[in-house]
Image (cartoon, rainbow, N blue to C red; front, top):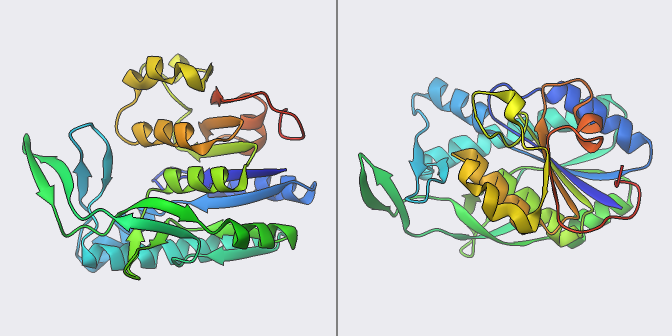
Length: 272
């Protein structure tokens, strides 16, 4: 069976603990695809270069990186560096991994006009290089997994005109989970999960069924909106949002930590 792990790229995520825990599970015989973000690395690189990152917020409240041509170059550099670091870390832990930092796994359609809110007014953004995911090369990922190699995928996609596109990492992980018919999609980030009160970690929503998602969407703001959208699109039997900053974050999440969104009855190794 196959599972997908998305490691958040925002500030405050603990990749070291998650990668060590992931390696242990791979050594036990499990097969995982690792998808990672690169937002903090891209922000830091943008500051160094003198071209600070900017954000877009849609009328519906979804937030994303404003990716003009210069920002795309910066993001792709940061994503490649992050990808290489994760592959090297897994290799040091005895895991054979293949870095897929280029637009060779994910396909997307460029968003030619994005409706965003600026200073309280709706505007159309036409110079953005982000994409809506249209497909995943499941054959490549499956071939690597069959060979005992863990794919490490960056959120960079190929557009219809051969252009590189920035895509949302959570939605990329969801598309991969669906394409591979993964049992579990686990997203680890710098928050405990879906909270009823964003200022109170004890207000964690522990579990619900995907059919109940409309009842919980009002709790989501900012990046959490994309994570719940990923749950809707993943098609995995189990979707988990959990904290990367805890001890053994993968084991803890699979054992019940975080927010679990169940989509169907599971059988097999990942139904802990």
